[in-house]
Length: 146
Image 1 (cartoon, one colour):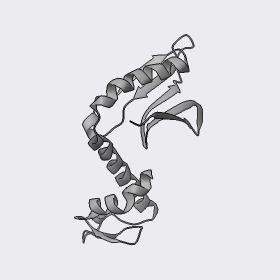
Image 2 (cartoon, helix red, strand yellow; image 1 turned 45 degrees about the vertical axis):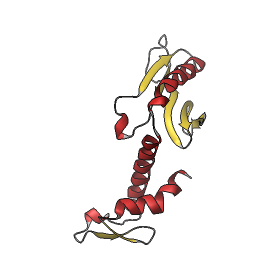
Image 3 (cartoon, helix red, strand yellow; image 1 turned 120 degrees about the vertical axis):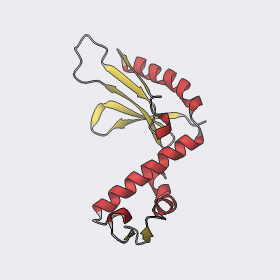
């Protein structure tokens, strides 16, 4: 089983992203806008393949250590309900989204945006509507989480 790792958010020193392998499964951060007497640290546990709607958990704590402990307890309950298919579903969606934005940045239409149903991928491959998902998976998925 993989271990959880934490990485600081590059733009907020009071925010940590929690990863299980290559997948962000949560956040621990100071919650802005709360009264000073309130518990300031918030944790969120879960990731978002469509099949996991409504399963995420969150909570508040007075200290980072308490927030981390709350997250880890929630993760121990959450992880047994995850299958490798859930992680793969998330990776596929992540690759698809990254591909779609890369096409936009390159100024290229998606096959669904052309009248012929054909397009050229930013990698140079010619694709049509029927093979787009397979192309993204085969040619671009591994590069998104390697």
